[in-house]
Image 1: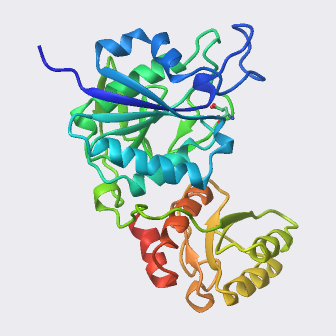
Image 2: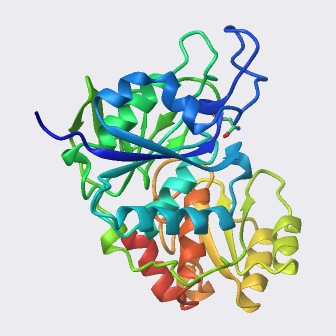
Length: 332
Ligand code: GLU
């Protein structure tokens, strides 16, 4: 009989660990309530496809995820994966910021082994809870040779996504995770991972980012564009010490005159300015809605604002050169 893979489940909380008093409650429940031991006990099927051990890393709703936890988590994942006896890692996570944690790890993990993030849209006590099947799929994926060298993955609703492209696109549907315009990497069915695409950006072992020895990440914030937008948010971020501002502009990262003035002023104060978009798909064209070359701005390519923030956080650990940072946005 083939040897089962050794998989570690790192639990961080979220709805997959959520509980409610009734099976019909799918909103207004308590998130991050059950521990990793209980999660594992609730899905005994995972022990038939892997040797499982669990660690509770934090116990939070994922809106409370922050730079400090990311730094610790990245280091922990690297340390665990450097052990030749460990074949893959599953991270259970709230769905709200799962895409950001996944992309952070995609950039800092130094291993070809699978790292799979998973969560649930319904609490563990709900009728047709999606957590158990998602967890089973995540363990199968983390133990699959097909998942090596694919970077960090998210599996939800039987669908495998790359950390770079995936986003939470519904507040409540069980197929909330989508990669708008670019598509999923594959499917998982009866614990077999079927891949149809490969991530093309640099990641994991080909990434230049390394957080060993770093114990603080820079302050990077996101300002949102809308009709009648003012410069107040941008000014406030700059005044409170942001080293980078992502502007989630309308359309192709378009700016009003007032926003443009605020961003030019920010840049003259050495703040890195990244033009992104609130649209949710497509790429922001350099020198399109603004003369980025002249203004010394960076464009986010196809990264959504929250992922652009993650990349800029890491970029700023290495450089403040905008040409180099722009190149990173094209490569990662
Ligand atoms: N807001 C909570 C979180 O992200 C619950 C949402 C979820 O996990 O689906 O942890």
